[in-house]
Length: 538
Image 1 (tube, rainbow, N blue to C red):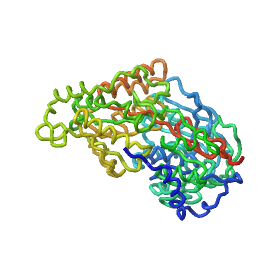
Image 2: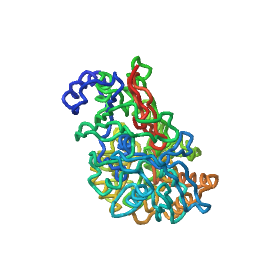
Image 3: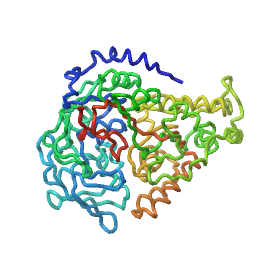
Image 4: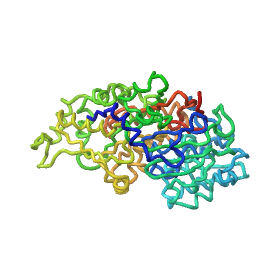
């Protein structure tokens, strides 16, 4: 496994960063409390909240996009652009009362018609918005008056409030929506209602934001009112762990996310720095196995993949005890996590080998891999390069080595492009897809990765109809006491049939200088919050 040379990286980081700073970002102005510079792992492929699919992109997008409602740390919902709401007895009509003092950053009014325009835009298949998965039951929106939005559903959806708190359904001005695909570019065309506006973008290097001076409508849980404290915020794209740590250690950035285990001691309990970790309520980092294709169509092969390695040891070796191995694809801090799965599977190479023998994979090639009819037992893991972060590729490589040694299975990691994965998904030809998802409603998470009309299985034939029916029943059930047992059954079936192999429970890590105040995590995303409440100073 890789072992970055931390000390050398800290020494050379200033050289690596010199000359790549965007205009205006090379000087240190944070001491005055007017600006902040982040070092982040990922450059967004798309800055449009409705189209973006990168979890780390939403950390950045949230700075200029607000949502209809907000989610509090206790899991309940609070006002944001809507001051109150009510749900009809049948659960198919949601009525929101909107604030009357909100404007987009270009000065135009946010009202019910603007909100409806966004929902209609996302729901329209012609716009190919990824956020459409949050509105699968949306039938229509109506505007009884300028500050009332009425949302009608085809059928009840217990995840809808979660959807309306998501950055993916954040609002852009109706004029911006007309620009279509160009909204993926980081430009002033991205007009939202958020506390910051885009002020400059250098591809491959950084994006810069400037305070929205009119802003005075934060989430209901916010203790701060009025415009943001900071005048400007810059995000530098620093994909290498050692470079980010070196940039923070040498004072070139004020904060970083994605701290590798080897670098935690540089900042945790270290003079002049702070280190914080967020909760793990989102999906675990999971291998999703296409159970309709190739060797993965055989439940014995899938179960051998699930049980053929000591995941505890692999996760501990890669992450040095900073994360825990996963038992479900629902995060352990999520209230709908099925704790009964803990200890119920994994680390049984003897059984895994027996299953592969029964499945007819009894031959061996010159490299020690199992074969049948001269064909190697291979499961390809297609991992889109833009989504690779947090040593997750290193983890898969470590698992790959264990599976080869223990059971002779070739877990073939392929770092592909986002376009290649999109094509595989469109044709249902993906084999194993590793991912996490940021929605925190467990029903929504399970629908997106296992549902027949959703992210992974929307174009796959031969899906598990029993599982799909359970998902639909769970989402149509608004009674949480009835819903939770259904969600637990879905998790158990997915693990038992090895449709999923959960690997570890991720959480965000933030390190910063001790002059940065107000750092936190957004509950709905489990990720670093936007910069609205952050101050810099002594």
